Image (cartoon, rainbow, N blue to C red; front, side, top):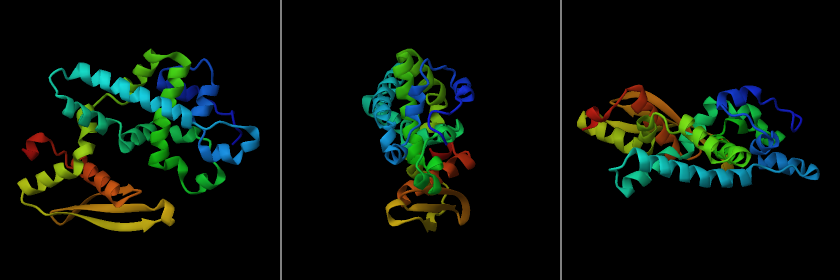
Length: 235
């Protein structure tokens, strides 16, 4: 892939925002591995944009949740915000918008599946937000966050407490719950774990993560969604 050669037309249409300076998007999609591979060309990575986007995201989420839930105490607002801006939630949004297609990666990262890695996709949600802010300011940044993150908040918020929610459901319905490690792949510094959630002796859903804990969390969340477990089922 030649740097600076991405066609962002489809991307901008889905985003609902057209960039004045496409260089902002090029930087937002440049992984540090690509920058290191092309040091002589001095290609900047998205890390500074991600840093900026992370701060803007926290502010915009805090502001919107404060407005939407006037009676919610500070502790609950903090917990809700954390569930919305976690790696899994942001990476799934980036995946649904095909952010990985536009990513500039080194050959090594490409070969090890960097385009689909949740940690990188999470970074991209924030780096793109940073790019939007630099290109157009706070209003289009807020539209981006509201459109893609602050919708279906109840469903997204379940992820943060997925394991405890599923445990409560299992106890209420007197069924066993366990998590089984199915596979462990990759080098020691970049392991990928696949875990199966087993409810009442039946395999329900799997989760894949870079720690066993995160894989279990994803498996629990997928189980809740698959079985359509709502508050009335847990209380």
